[in-house]
Length: 240
Image 1 (cartoon, rainbow, N blue to C red):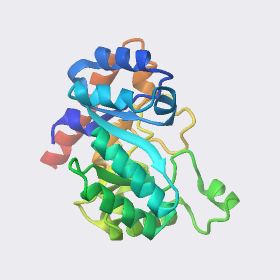
Image 2 (cartoon, helix red, strand yellow; image 1 turned 120 degrees about the vertical axis):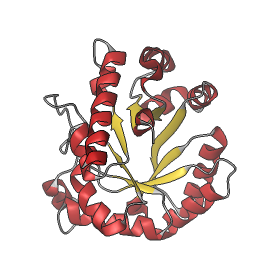
Image 3 (tube, helix red, strand yellow; image 1 turned 90 degrees about the horizontal axis):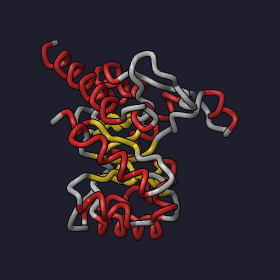
Image 4 (cartoon, rainbow, N blue to C red; image 1 turned 180 degrees about the vertical axis):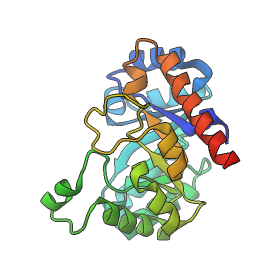
């Protein structure tokens, strides 16, 4: 896998104008862009169509969580837009996950369905507040096994859980890791953050990076720095 295919830039911006500026500034340093609730709510599906038409890949991160029939319909609509990846909440249960993966597999574009386990903004104490027994790791492993059994192509999880996920779920399951920051960068509101090197070493397949690139004085330079860190980590892994 090419380095630029492993970096996903999160377009967490208020509108299409800002998104286009970021994509243009980054250039060839990244090929895949995450569109989440903020941008999609502001601009609708056209922003997805525009990115796909430009030759970029889109990771549609709307975290579908509803009754199975509703989620299946949403997945079919996302597939028609040409997205490469999309997210559903693993906590929606096995029936919902299965209908989502079936809808994706039956579409011409066959996007990868990624299950969100535990949001990277949540800590052990947050789970206790929600009435969930156990810690973050145990919940991630529980939901990860559920998602794999339902046919999902991968998970969204912190790299801090990736190593244990790899042991439990195998090498073929994709792990998409948010909360990635270069060494020394601010964590923001993420409770569980890692560097690109740590994420790759833990077994992450794709790394999602937002604010460190979007808020940088030079987004292209920031994206290239992340890409270089990924490349170095991959080289180190390959050489042992």
